[in-house]
Length: 116
Image (tube, rainbow, N blue to C red; front, side, top):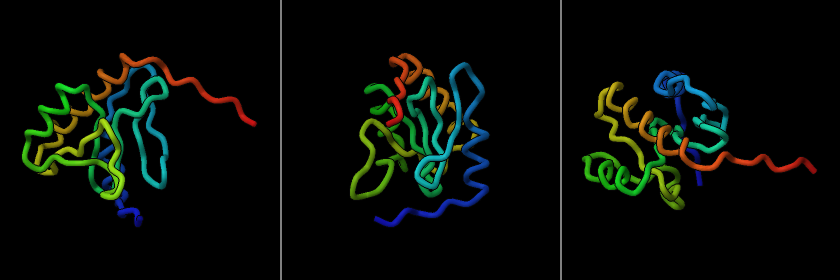
């Protein structure tokens, strides 16, 4: 399962879409970057695709937009996430990232596993 390449510009664009908020951090993940709130991922970068985790209504709304689709490897896309259409403006994509953060912030914080 080859990982698609992302550019430094892709990573910078992704980071710019993740607004600062309590509990939010952007960190490396499998050679790319992901955005987390309270330890739970709400958005990620896969190649040049930005994927977001939404509630069922949000997923249906996003799925209806032309150009949206599964997020992650074609052989094993991430459940609960969809890729944003690439033809959306940065402001529109940022609004979806914000919506994902708001949804995931309602979930219980991720508990870190103790180191062995």
